[in-house]
Length: 420
Image (tube, rainbow, N blue to C red; front, side):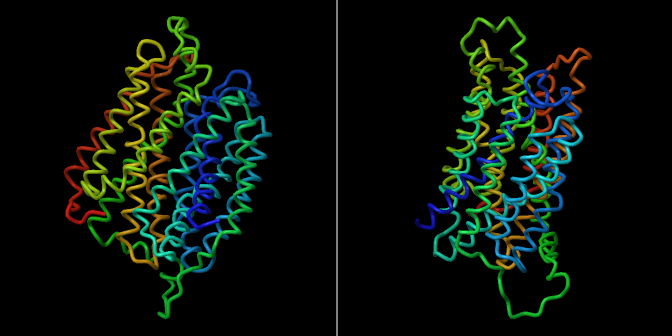
C-alpha cells in the first residue's frame, strides 16, 4: 500500500469516528423517546455536552503536540488516543443518566480532539519525508476524511440510529480499528536536535514565541472568535430539522418528509460540500492569499446561519440546501487553510505544538464559548413548552459572524503577495 493510500485510510477512519455521532447526537440528547437517557436534555445541557470537546481542546492538543514534538512517535500517540476513545465511547453508549454521559464524553473528547491535529502532523511529516509538498498533496488526502464523515452519517441514518445510542457503538468500533491501524503507519519520530534545550523548550512552551509576532497573535485571536461558529450547526442542526416534524403545515411535501425522516442524510449535504471545497483550497490560496480566503469563510458563515434562519423543509427547502452548500466554504476556508498557514509560518521543531495551539484556539476556547453561548441563545428563544424560535436564534449567530468578519478585515494585515 503506497503512502498516500495509507494516509487516506487514516483520514477516512479519523473522521468516520466523529461523523458517527457528531451531527445526530444533538437529536439523541433531546429525543423524548427512542434514546436511553432517562429524560431529554435542555438546550443548555446540549450545549454543555458538546462543549466538552472545547474543554478538552483547551489543554489536550497542546500536551499531545508537546509529546509528539519531543518524546513519542506521533503515529503511536495517535493509536493510544484512539484505543482509549474506543473504551469511553462504548461505556457512553450504555449509560442512562446525563451526568455520567457528560463525564464519559468529556473523557472521550480529551483523547479524541488531539488526534485531529496529530493526524495532520503525521501527514505533513510523512509527506515531507517523501518529498511531497503538503500544500498540494494534503488536501486530496484530507478530503477522504470528509468522505468518512459522510459515510458514517449515511450508515447512522439508513440504519435508523439517529436517536439511538448505537451511534456511539459504531464510533467505538471505528476508534478501535484506527487505534490498531495507527501502529502500522511509518514512523513519525520527534524532531532530534543537537541544541541543548531549556525547560521551556522541553515542555513544548517554545511554541508560545509565536505570540511575539503581532500578525500571528491577531490570527490566533480570530481563530478563537471564528471557532465560536464552527460547531453551532453541528450541535443544534439535527434538533432544528427534527423540530419540523411536529409542524403539519409542511407535512404534505416530499422534502419535509425526507428531511425529518432522514435528517442525517439531509444534513450531510454540508459535508459533501466540505469535501468539494477542500479540493479548491490550493487554487484559492494561490489566487487570493490567506487573508481573502479566511475573509470568504467569515462571509460564508453569515450566509450559513442566515439561510438557516429563513429556510424550512417545505417551500423554503432551497434556502436550507443553499446554507448546506456554503458550509463547505465556511468550514474549510478557515479550518484547513488555517492549518496550512500554521504549517508554513512556524519552524519545523515546533510545528506539532503550533498545530496544537491552533486546535486549542478554534476547537478549544472557541468551541467552549460557541457551544455554551449557543445553548444560552437557543434556550433564550425556547418557550416554556419546548418550542424554539429558530429564525431568531440563527439570525443572532449570523449577526455575530458579520461583526467579527468586519473586524478581521480591519485588523488582519497579512499581505497577499506572500501567498501559500
